[in-house]
Image (spheres, rainbow, N blue to C red):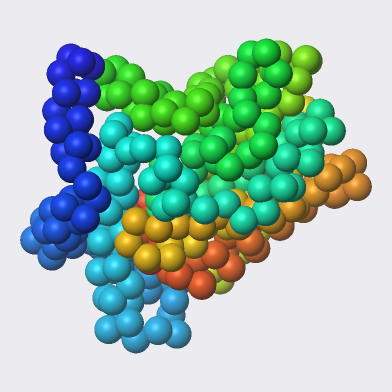
Length: 295
């Protein structure tokens, strides 16, 4: 089944992106205007987060969101058949020297990241760093992930996400694997931290886009356990098929940062990213579904 999926996805991946974007535009129209994929969730989120905007302005953000969402699908498929040169031209990293310096000092790095389009291209950071990952130099680039229920599709996505030598690390074994990786070398690993906390994560109560929000605290807890430096990946959508991540340093020494403050700092940075370009974020998730506990 995995092989069949890979063949089916490889066929469109052979096409250039300029030929895939018309298909993406059709998919975006179908999702947003015909099927109405999570349309109510999207619009409810936008109304609550941008009460100062008119309904027309929010509808425009929604249309751009659906186009970005559809583009991210074809762009993810394209990873199966894209040259290193084209990817490095389409995905820029500003401030990669921060990563190189920390890892050259044998420091571990926890990357705060979010579901901003197109996050699936972020593992190409390995092509921009001077410290190339390999077992010999004990350099590891990776991302934490939650396995998909469909095993065949999960294997396909693991293949796509490891295209640039970036390692996918199962969330359930993350601490154990990262401790092992840090014993003889250093790592730079991304955590998607914009979802509401899962079971067992107490979360950090803060404010995001004017709304009381319980943010994931597990990223900060793990960073402290591993004595890691923390950075933020600030995604920008430059044009269709072109992105830039600006690497922003958050904390070198977490012993100097009060508990919970790193998570709050990340929340502020994420809000700046979203307010700069609202359509870049994944609005179709009901992030405020659960009531905020009284503290």
